[in-house]
Length: 335
Ligand SMILES: [Zn+2]
Ligand SMILES: [Zn+2]
Image 1 (tube, protein in one colour):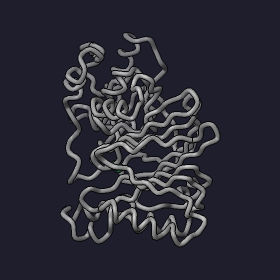
Image 2 (cartoon, rainbow, N blue to C red; image 1 turned 60 degrees about the horizontal axis):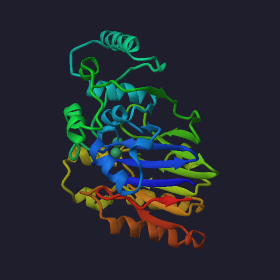
Image 3 (cartoon, rainbow, N blue to C red; image 1 turned 120 degrees about the vertical axis):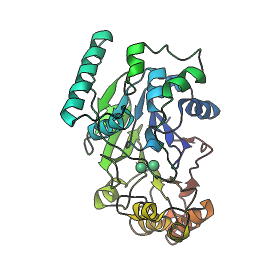
C-alpha cells in the first residue's frame, strides 16, 4: 500500500509522510521534532518507523526540525549538495571565515566525527540561506538541543559534547542531484529544479508500487521542466500560495510582496489554476493545493479558483480537490 499524509503545509512548517513498499520517508521537516511526532502519531504513523528525511530546500519552514529529528531517529537526510551547504551555513555559528577557511573547518569536523562514529561515508558541506517569507519566518531555532532534551527525555539520545557543539551534525547525509533519479528503499524518486530563491530547490515525483505522486511547492512559476514532470500522476500536490489581490492589498512590506510575486517566489492561486486548466493532464485521483499563505489567501478562495479551472474540463470532474493545512494534518491518502 502507498500512503501519503500531509502533516503540515505553509510558511510556518512543512512535513509530509510517504510510505510505499517497506519504506517510509518524511518529505521536508519544517515542524519541531515534538510537533512532528505528535502529528504523526495522531495520524497513526510511528515516527520510529521512518527510514529517511528528504529535503526540498533550506528555507526554515522546510528544515526547521531536521537536525533534532534525524538525530533522535538516527536516520539519514537526503539533500542536494547545494541545499545541504546552505542549511549548514544557515545554522553554523556566524563567524567571519572565508569560504576556504570555513570549508577547512567543516572538513576537520567531519574527519573528527568519522574518527568517533562508525563511518557512513557521508561528507558534510554547507552554504547560505534565507528565511522563506521574512515576515512570517524568523531566525533559525537555536534551542534545538534544549528542545530535544525537553521534548521527551526518555527518547532523547544523550548528545555527546562534541556533537552538541556542532549544530550541523547529522547521523548521515546523502546527496542527490536535481534531475538525477535515485531511490530510497522501495520508493523511486525523480527530482527536478524549481524556480525559487533558495540555493538548489527541487520538487519531486515519487513512484512506489506503480503509484506516481507529484510534489511541487515553493516555486515562482511553472517552467517547462516542471510541466514535463507533472504528468501521468495519481496524486498531485501543488502550491497555491496566495491570491494576487489579497497579496497586493495585504500586510506584507513592499519588498516581501515583490519577493513572493517574483519568478523565484511562490505560485498564486491564479497561476495554479492556469496550470490546471491549460497544462495538467487530469489523470490524478487527487489534487492537493498546498503551502497556502495565512496572510494572503483564504482556503475557499484557493479552492474556488482551482475548481473553476477544473470544472471547465469534463475529464477532470473525477479529480478530488483537497487543501493541505498549516495547523492540522490532512487525512492519509491510500492507494
Ligand atoms: Zn516554504
Ligand atoms: Zn521556500
